[in-house]
Image (cartoon, rainbow, N blue to C red; front, side):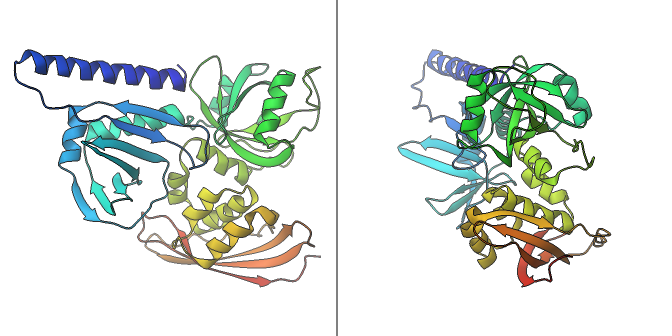
Length: 382
Protein backbone atom coordinates (compact mmCIF):
# COMPACT_ATOMS: atom_id res chain seq x y z
CA UNK A 1 0.00 0.00 0.00
CA UNK A 2 1.39 3.40 -0.97
CA UNK A 3 2.08 6.18 1.55
CA UNK A 4 -0.79 8.18 0.06
CA UNK A 5 -3.22 5.28 0.47
CA UNK A 6 -2.07 4.78 4.08
CA UNK A 7 -2.67 8.46 4.83
CA UNK A 8 -6.08 8.35 3.17
CA UNK A 9 -7.15 5.21 5.05
CA UNK A 10 -6.05 6.62 8.40
CA UNK A 11 -7.98 9.83 7.80
CA UNK A 12 -11.13 7.94 6.80
CA UNK A 13 -10.96 5.67 9.86
CA UNK A 14 -10.32 8.55 12.24
CA UNK A 15 -13.08 10.64 10.70
CA UNK A 16 -15.53 7.73 10.93
CA UNK A 17 -14.69 7.27 14.62
CA UNK A 18 -15.42 10.95 15.23
CA UNK A 19 -18.82 10.67 13.53
CA UNK A 20 -19.78 7.69 15.71
CA UNK A 21 -18.80 9.58 18.85
CA UNK A 22 -20.87 12.59 17.78
CA UNK A 23 -23.88 10.37 17.01
CA UNK A 24 -23.65 8.66 20.41
CA UNK A 25 -23.49 12.04 22.18
CA UNK A 26 -26.58 13.28 20.30
CA UNK A 27 -28.54 10.11 21.08
CA UNK A 28 -27.78 10.56 24.79
CA UNK A 29 -30.17 13.51 24.72
CA UNK A 30 -27.84 16.04 26.26
CA UNK A 31 -26.73 19.15 24.48
CA UNK A 32 -23.22 18.24 23.28
CA UNK A 33 -20.52 20.81 23.61
CA UNK A 34 -18.95 22.12 20.44
CA UNK A 35 -16.48 19.49 19.28
CA UNK A 36 -12.82 20.50 19.61
CA UNK A 37 -10.91 21.01 16.40
CA UNK A 38 -8.92 18.12 14.99
CA UNK A 39 -5.19 17.70 15.47
CA UNK A 40 -3.25 17.74 12.20
CA UNK A 41 0.14 16.01 12.18
CA UNK A 42 2.48 17.23 9.45
CA UNK A 43 5.72 15.46 8.52
CA UNK A 44 8.22 17.39 6.41
CA UNK A 45 11.93 16.53 6.26
CA UNK A 46 12.85 20.23 6.02
CA UNK A 47 10.86 23.49 6.04
CA UNK A 48 11.50 23.81 2.28
CA UNK A 49 10.60 20.22 1.40
CA UNK A 50 7.95 19.71 -1.26
CA UNK A 51 7.07 16.24 0.05
CA UNK A 52 4.56 16.65 2.88
CA UNK A 53 2.52 14.03 4.75
CA UNK A 54 -0.52 15.09 6.78
CA UNK A 55 -2.61 13.02 9.17
CA UNK A 56 -5.83 14.49 10.61
CA UNK A 57 -6.67 13.06 14.04
CA UNK A 58 -10.10 13.35 15.68
CA UNK A 59 -9.70 11.56 18.99
CA UNK A 60 -11.12 12.27 22.48
CA UNK A 61 -8.01 10.69 24.04
CA UNK A 62 -5.76 13.16 22.23
CA UNK A 63 -8.01 16.07 23.22
CA UNK A 64 -7.87 14.96 26.87
CA UNK A 65 -4.09 14.76 26.69
CA UNK A 66 -3.96 18.31 25.35
CA UNK A 67 -6.27 19.60 28.10
CA UNK A 68 -4.06 18.02 30.78
CA UNK A 69 -0.74 19.03 29.27
CA UNK A 70 1.78 20.64 31.58
CA UNK A 71 3.04 23.95 30.20
CA UNK A 72 6.38 25.58 30.88
CA UNK A 73 7.99 28.79 29.58
CA UNK A 74 10.15 27.98 26.58
CA UNK A 75 12.22 29.84 24.01
CA UNK A 76 13.55 26.81 22.13
CA UNK A 77 12.76 26.15 18.48
CA UNK A 78 13.83 22.52 17.98
CA UNK A 79 15.17 20.95 14.82
CA UNK A 80 12.34 18.66 13.82
CA UNK A 81 10.38 17.15 10.97
CA UNK A 82 7.15 16.84 12.97
CA UNK A 83 4.64 19.67 13.34
CA UNK A 84 1.19 19.81 14.94
CA UNK A 85 -1.63 22.26 14.31
CA UNK A 86 -4.70 22.35 16.56
CA UNK A 87 -7.67 24.70 16.74
CA UNK A 88 -8.27 25.23 20.45
CA UNK A 89 -11.62 26.98 20.45
CA UNK A 90 -11.00 30.20 18.57
CA UNK A 91 -7.21 29.90 18.84
CA UNK A 92 -5.16 28.15 16.18
CA UNK A 93 -2.02 26.67 17.73
CA UNK A 94 1.08 25.36 15.97
CA UNK A 95 3.68 23.14 17.63
CA UNK A 96 7.09 21.75 16.73
CA UNK A 97 7.52 18.28 18.29
CA UNK A 98 11.02 17.43 19.47
CA UNK A 99 12.60 13.98 19.68
CA UNK A 100 11.51 13.57 23.31
CA UNK A 101 7.86 14.16 22.44
CA UNK A 102 7.62 17.70 23.85
CA UNK A 103 5.45 20.14 21.93
CA UNK A 104 7.00 23.59 21.46
CA UNK A 105 4.50 26.37 20.82
CA UNK A 106 6.93 29.00 19.62
CA UNK A 107 4.33 31.76 19.14
CA UNK A 108 3.27 31.53 22.81
CA UNK A 109 6.75 30.80 24.19
CA UNK A 110 5.55 27.56 25.82
CA UNK A 111 6.61 23.92 25.96
CA UNK A 112 3.79 21.41 26.34
CA UNK A 113 4.63 18.08 27.94
CA UNK A 114 2.24 15.48 26.59
CA UNK A 115 2.07 11.74 27.06
CA UNK A 116 -0.07 8.94 25.81
CA UNK A 117 0.50 5.86 23.70
CA UNK A 118 -2.30 6.78 21.30
CA UNK A 119 -0.80 10.17 20.53
CA UNK A 120 2.65 8.67 19.96
CA UNK A 121 1.12 5.98 17.74
CA UNK A 122 -0.48 8.60 15.47
CA UNK A 123 2.83 10.43 15.08
CA UNK A 124 4.65 7.18 14.32
CA UNK A 125 1.98 6.25 11.75
CA UNK A 126 2.45 9.58 9.99
CA UNK A 127 6.23 9.17 9.98
CA UNK A 128 5.98 5.62 8.68
CA UNK A 129 3.82 6.84 5.79
CA UNK A 130 6.26 9.64 4.97
CA UNK A 131 9.65 7.91 5.13
CA UNK A 132 11.16 4.74 3.70
CA UNK A 133 12.02 1.55 5.54
CA UNK A 134 15.66 1.19 6.56
CA UNK A 135 16.56 -2.10 4.87
CA UNK A 136 20.08 -3.51 4.42
CA UNK A 137 21.19 -3.91 0.81
CA UNK A 138 20.95 -7.70 1.03
CA UNK A 139 17.24 -7.31 1.76
CA UNK A 140 16.56 -4.26 -0.41
CA UNK A 141 17.96 -5.88 -3.54
CA UNK A 142 15.22 -8.53 -3.37
CA UNK A 143 12.68 -5.76 -3.96
CA UNK A 144 14.86 -3.80 -6.37
CA UNK A 145 15.48 -6.96 -8.38
CA UNK A 146 17.41 -7.03 -11.63
CA UNK A 147 15.38 -5.54 -14.51
CA UNK A 148 12.61 -4.45 -12.13
CA UNK A 149 11.01 -1.04 -12.64
CA UNK A 150 10.75 1.10 -9.50
CA UNK A 151 9.34 4.47 -8.55
CA UNK A 152 12.00 6.83 -7.21
CA UNK A 153 10.72 9.78 -5.12
CA UNK A 154 12.98 12.64 -4.09
CA UNK A 155 12.46 13.47 -0.41
CA UNK A 156 13.00 17.22 -0.83
CA UNK A 157 11.21 18.12 -4.06
CA UNK A 158 8.56 15.38 -3.84
CA UNK A 159 9.07 14.62 -7.55
CA UNK A 160 8.86 10.98 -8.70
CA UNK A 161 10.08 9.12 -11.78
CA UNK A 162 10.37 5.53 -12.98
CA UNK A 163 13.76 3.80 -13.16
CA UNK A 164 14.91 0.29 -13.99
CA UNK A 165 17.71 -1.62 -12.33
CA UNK A 166 20.00 -2.72 -15.15
CA UNK A 167 23.10 -3.93 -13.29
CA UNK A 168 25.07 -3.67 -10.07
CA UNK A 169 25.97 -6.18 -7.37
CA UNK A 170 27.17 -3.92 -4.56
CA UNK A 171 24.45 -1.33 -5.19
CA UNK A 172 21.79 -0.71 -7.85
CA UNK A 173 22.78 0.65 -11.27
CA UNK A 174 19.62 2.32 -12.54
CA UNK A 175 18.34 4.10 -15.63
CA UNK A 176 15.29 6.30 -16.16
CA UNK A 177 12.73 4.35 -18.20
CA UNK A 178 11.59 7.08 -20.62
CA UNK A 179 12.59 10.57 -21.76
CA UNK A 180 9.85 11.95 -19.51
CA UNK A 181 11.43 10.16 -16.51
CA UNK A 182 14.84 11.56 -17.46
CA UNK A 183 13.37 15.07 -17.60
CA UNK A 184 11.89 14.70 -14.10
CA UNK A 185 15.17 13.37 -12.71
CA UNK A 186 17.04 16.32 -14.22
CA UNK A 187 14.47 18.71 -12.73
CA UNK A 188 15.21 17.22 -9.30
CA UNK A 189 18.83 18.26 -9.81
CA UNK A 190 17.91 21.80 -10.85
CA UNK A 191 18.47 21.20 -14.57
CA UNK A 192 22.12 20.05 -14.35
CA UNK A 193 23.48 16.55 -13.76
CA UNK A 194 25.42 16.24 -10.52
CA UNK A 195 27.25 13.75 -8.30
CA UNK A 196 25.43 15.17 -5.27
CA UNK A 197 23.68 12.55 -3.17
CA UNK A 198 19.97 12.97 -2.53
CA UNK A 199 17.72 11.14 -0.09
CA UNK A 200 15.11 9.17 -2.05
CA UNK A 201 12.32 6.65 -1.50
CA UNK A 202 12.30 3.59 -3.75
CA UNK A 203 9.15 1.51 -4.16
CA UNK A 204 7.94 -1.15 -6.53
CA UNK A 205 4.38 -1.77 -7.76
CA UNK A 206 2.82 0.28 -4.98
CA UNK A 207 4.68 -1.59 -2.23
CA UNK A 208 6.27 0.04 0.83
CA UNK A 209 9.04 2.52 0.15
CA UNK A 210 12.67 1.75 1.01
CA UNK A 211 15.10 4.43 2.20
CA UNK A 212 17.85 5.05 -0.34
CA UNK A 213 20.28 7.60 -1.78
CA UNK A 214 20.96 8.46 -5.40
CA UNK A 215 23.39 10.65 -7.31
CA UNK A 216 22.49 12.36 -10.57
CA UNK A 217 25.38 11.85 -12.99
CA UNK A 218 25.03 9.66 -16.11
CA UNK A 219 28.06 7.40 -16.46
CA UNK A 220 29.05 3.96 -17.69
CA UNK A 221 26.99 1.70 -19.92
CA UNK A 222 23.69 2.58 -21.57
CA UNK A 223 20.94 -0.01 -21.88
CA UNK A 224 17.63 1.73 -22.59
CA UNK A 225 17.61 3.27 -26.07
CA UNK A 226 15.65 6.46 -26.51
CA UNK A 227 15.39 7.46 -22.84
CA UNK A 228 17.62 10.50 -23.27
CA UNK A 229 19.99 9.33 -20.54
CA UNK A 230 23.50 8.40 -21.64
CA UNK A 231 24.58 5.78 -19.13
CA UNK A 232 23.25 4.83 -15.71
CA UNK A 233 23.11 6.36 -12.23
CA UNK A 234 23.58 4.71 -8.85
CA UNK A 235 21.19 4.13 -5.97
CA UNK A 236 22.62 3.04 -2.62
CA UNK A 237 20.85 1.43 0.32
CA UNK A 238 21.87 0.74 3.92
CA UNK A 239 25.28 -0.94 3.89
CA UNK A 240 25.70 -1.01 0.12
CA UNK A 241 29.17 -0.26 -1.26
CA UNK A 242 30.87 1.11 -4.35
CA UNK A 243 31.75 -1.32 -7.14
CA UNK A 244 35.36 -0.25 -7.46
CA UNK A 245 36.74 0.17 -3.93
CA UNK A 246 34.05 -1.98 -2.27
CA UNK A 247 33.88 0.70 0.42
CA UNK A 248 30.67 1.98 1.99
CA UNK A 249 30.17 5.59 0.85
CA UNK A 250 29.44 7.72 3.96
CA UNK A 251 27.73 10.45 1.92
CA UNK A 252 25.25 7.93 0.54
CA UNK A 253 24.74 6.33 3.95
CA UNK A 254 23.82 9.59 5.69
CA UNK A 255 21.32 10.33 2.92
CA UNK A 256 19.85 6.84 3.45
CA UNK A 257 19.37 7.72 7.14
CA UNK A 258 17.66 10.95 6.08
CA UNK A 259 15.33 9.04 3.71
CA UNK A 260 14.38 6.80 6.65
CA UNK A 261 13.80 9.76 9.01
CA UNK A 262 16.65 8.46 11.19
CA UNK A 263 19.22 11.29 11.22
CA UNK A 264 18.86 11.91 14.97
CA UNK A 265 19.05 8.20 15.73
CA UNK A 266 22.16 7.76 13.55
CA UNK A 267 23.87 10.72 15.22
CA UNK A 268 23.09 9.28 18.68
CA UNK A 269 24.89 6.10 17.71
CA UNK A 270 27.83 7.76 15.95
CA UNK A 271 31.30 7.98 17.46
CA UNK A 272 33.07 11.37 17.63
CA UNK A 273 34.90 10.41 14.42
CA UNK A 274 31.57 9.48 12.82
CA UNK A 275 30.12 12.88 13.78
CA UNK A 276 33.17 14.64 12.27
CA UNK A 277 32.64 12.59 9.12
CA UNK A 278 28.95 13.60 9.09
CA UNK A 279 30.08 17.24 9.27
CA UNK A 280 31.98 16.79 6.00
CA UNK A 281 29.02 14.99 4.44
CA UNK A 282 26.72 17.88 5.38
CA UNK A 283 29.01 20.34 3.60
CA UNK A 284 29.58 18.12 0.57
CA UNK A 285 25.86 17.47 0.11
CA UNK A 286 24.73 20.96 1.24
CA UNK A 287 22.54 19.45 3.95
CA UNK A 288 21.75 22.28 6.34
CA UNK A 289 19.56 20.12 8.59
CA UNK A 290 22.35 17.61 9.19
CA UNK A 291 24.89 20.39 9.79
CA UNK A 292 22.66 22.08 12.40
CA UNK A 293 22.17 18.83 14.31
CA UNK A 294 25.93 18.36 14.71
CA UNK A 295 26.60 21.60 16.62
CA UNK A 296 25.79 21.88 20.32
CA UNK A 297 25.20 25.64 20.00
CA UNK A 298 22.67 26.65 17.31
CA UNK A 299 24.39 30.06 17.16
CA UNK A 300 27.96 28.75 17.02
CA UNK A 301 30.01 31.11 14.77
CA UNK A 302 31.44 28.21 12.75
CA UNK A 303 27.97 26.82 12.14
CA UNK A 304 26.76 30.23 10.95
CA UNK A 305 29.89 30.60 8.81
CA UNK A 306 29.48 27.27 7.03
CA UNK A 307 25.74 27.77 6.56
CA UNK A 308 26.55 30.99 4.71
CA UNK A 309 29.53 29.57 2.78
CA UNK A 310 28.00 26.19 1.96
CA UNK A 311 27.03 27.06 -1.63
CA UNK A 312 30.60 28.12 -2.44
CA UNK A 313 32.11 24.82 -1.27
CA UNK A 314 32.37 22.32 -4.11
CA UNK A 315 33.69 19.60 -1.84
CA UNK A 316 35.80 18.68 1.19
CA UNK A 317 37.87 15.52 1.13
CA UNK A 318 39.53 14.15 4.26
CA UNK A 319 42.78 12.25 4.13
CA UNK A 320 42.11 8.66 5.13
CA UNK A 321 43.75 8.01 8.54
CA UNK A 322 46.05 5.02 8.83
CA UNK A 323 44.06 3.96 11.87
CA UNK A 324 40.66 5.11 13.06
CA UNK A 325 40.76 7.01 16.38
CA UNK A 326 40.15 4.94 19.47
CA UNK A 327 36.53 5.38 20.59
CA UNK A 328 36.24 7.22 23.93
CA UNK A 329 35.32 5.34 27.07
CA UNK A 330 31.70 4.60 27.86
CA UNK A 331 31.52 7.37 30.47
CA UNK A 332 33.55 9.95 28.51
CA UNK A 333 31.80 13.24 27.77
CA UNK A 334 34.56 15.00 25.80
CA UNK A 335 36.66 14.01 22.78
CA UNK A 336 38.94 15.58 20.17
CA UNK A 337 39.19 14.70 16.48
CA UNK A 338 41.63 15.98 13.83
CA UNK A 339 40.83 15.72 10.12
CA UNK A 340 43.42 16.61 7.46
CA UNK A 341 41.35 17.84 4.52
CA UNK A 342 41.45 19.42 1.09
CA UNK A 343 38.77 22.06 0.54
CA UNK A 344 37.56 22.84 -2.99
CA UNK A 345 35.88 26.20 -3.54
CA UNK A 346 34.51 27.67 -6.71
CA UNK A 347 37.09 29.98 -8.30
CA UNK A 348 39.86 29.06 -5.81
CA UNK A 349 42.79 26.70 -5.71
CA UNK A 350 42.39 23.65 -3.44
CA UNK A 351 43.14 24.56 0.18
CA UNK A 352 44.77 22.10 2.58
CA UNK A 353 43.26 22.55 6.03
CA UNK A 354 43.22 20.71 9.35
CA UNK A 355 39.87 20.66 11.12
CA UNK A 356 40.21 20.36 14.90
CA UNK A 357 36.94 19.26 16.50
CA UNK A 358 36.27 19.43 20.23
CA UNK A 359 33.25 17.23 20.91
CA UNK A 360 31.01 16.90 23.93
CA UNK A 361 27.89 15.02 24.99
CA UNK A 362 25.48 15.35 27.87
CA UNK A 363 25.86 11.73 29.00
CA UNK A 364 26.69 8.27 27.70
CA UNK A 365 23.32 7.99 25.93
CA UNK A 366 23.42 11.51 24.46
CA UNK A 367 24.78 12.23 20.96
CA UNK A 368 28.26 13.63 20.40
CA UNK A 369 28.14 17.22 19.13
CA UNK A 370 30.68 19.85 18.12
CA UNK A 371 31.44 22.17 21.02
CA UNK A 372 34.21 24.01 19.19
CA UNK A 373 35.82 23.84 15.76
CA UNK A 374 39.12 25.45 14.77
CA UNK A 375 40.74 25.37 11.33
CA UNK A 376 44.42 25.72 10.49
CA UNK A 377 46.34 25.47 7.22
CA UNK A 378 48.25 22.27 6.55
CA UNK A 379 51.10 21.42 4.21
CA UNK A 380 49.86 20.08 0.84
CA UNK A 381 50.04 16.33 0.45
CA UNK A 382 52.85 15.02 -1.75
